Length: 351
Figure 1: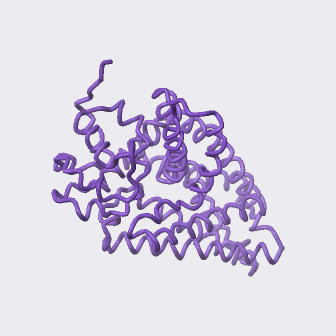
Figure 2: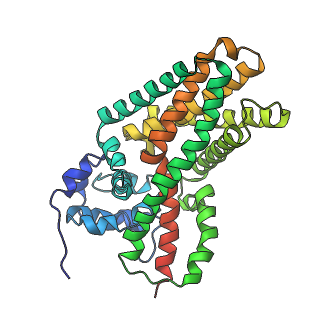
């Protein structure tokens, strides 16, 4: 069987944040020290070798890079300072581009200009909607509520779901993995559990507090989504729902603010290198919680009618988040990692 080698793979990956790839001489320290590696899933070394040999197709069908939670221990102990943890992060960005049928994920990861244009177009579109609605508070907020519902449905069905099927095709079907049919069903529980808890990261020595922060942000984000989209938080008069919204907003913007400070300080291995997608993810998630909190506060104090600009800012943040960052940014790692674990479990029981 022939193997296709792509000599430009390294150059292509550099556009996704790859830097010191050639410092590695395969001592195996990173794989040996990682508590998450196991038989058949020998990362980061397996991915690094594929990059050095230009094995693009081989890299595209690996789930291994997603099994890494980037605790940074491999980079801290690497005798060559090859930064294998950050290298895995770059590979994950690259794989996001591979799965995405639209091509926009790769474009936005590679080009800040393209991303800026995308953000600008969304901003103009939201302002145009406000203008069409006459900047009337009730009409604009009603549109915003409907927009949240439709954008979730559209992004999931038109972009994320096809991308997951493409990932399944590359990692399972093309590799002719023959797992028992029953394992597909029983694995769904583990898929959901890993998706919401990310509990495998607790195996990392430095993972406890970081896991707790991530867990609270995930729960806060999902509850914020639930209260604003399905419980219509900005319009409800239910006291319990109102206070629930305030609490989850607080969770989101307090912990994301801590993430932002952490990246600015660069005290830990995991925050030493920040791609523009890392910054956009934490800043926009912070803005989601922060602006939602004050919109509801202005509603409760009857100030929103004279300060529609605040809701317009919130709607712009939501639109940019939902249209650009969720389907094409770092948010997808939450989804792809969970399915990678699911697919890895299928490989373990394959015949």
